[in-house]
Length: 428
Image 1 (cartoon, helix red, strand yellow):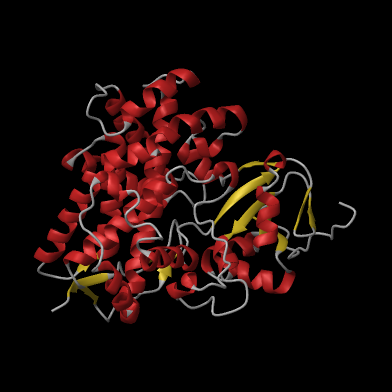
Image 2 (cartoon, rainbow, N blue to C red; image 1 turned 90 degrees about the vertical axis):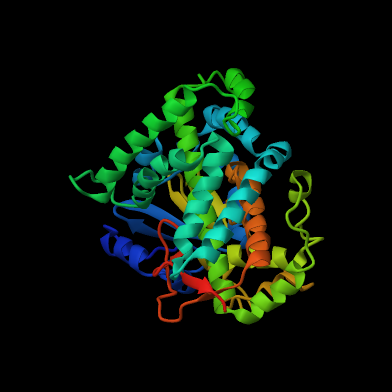
């Protein structure tokens, strides 16, 4: 503490203008890092907020788990619920985390593979049959939602659709102003949340057999003392659906966007894809496209996660004073790890999308797109498997091109996605 430096600040008081700038300026954090250094404090609607970037500051934060706890904005806390893993800390968080982790073991992933491959085949057939341009972003959202609802809940067809519309309404308001005015996005999301939990409760009240991965939870639920059909479990499933849907859909869409905008990268990737087996067996699928067997595919996925991480950052709240990259951060401060700014901070062409960098011997980038420390995303392995299967399966079956007259720029909330939906057609 004696060697630490004071915390730089923007000087914002109410935080009104800072908040408006945060939601409208993609370079919000980066501009302030350039002026104030890798750790700075500002105010966001009266909430003191410390932004950090860089390997040292992030490593310092994650190496002191006893000094911090999880934190999310009020809109997220209300829409996820008080039982949700995202809003819990300490023993309650660890107990539920152990339960939910059973859905993402290697054996569980093998169970999910046939269903994922079937959904990829269905999407490929749909794209081949389309008579007009298709929004690939929308298709990726439906695909990601179908995967998580099929693998975890065992839902099919119409049952998935019944959840999807409410889930879209709920998701769009997660990062919004938490004021429940009639007709506001937040008010609509609260109503959608109620309907979603009611539907999840009905699913939980049905027999377990044949319902995706729910049977994997039973023993752990008993150990943690969580009733199987309780609202507690419903909120864990709600979080899983969001984490397995929104962020994966964003990563898939951003990956496709980069390949469509950079034909030379697609050509480079296809040279490797043409040598890979498809479809893999369930046992093969968890390892057949790993870095040793598909290095270019691995480099592409890493670069997408670096260039357009599915979440712009993650939060912690300090329970005591701590030092981050030589800067003293006081107790009771919310810390945001600014992933987008951090991933482009350093020497070299980091503002350019270039997957090949990850195959170079001098590449030393530390990427944490799924968060880090004790609260790293539980669905990380499923998301990575899903993305790799989609790329190999879809690109082995067809060739796409993007319509030129559209807006390819990204909206950032709740996760990056092309503004015009990434309109595509079959390449002739």
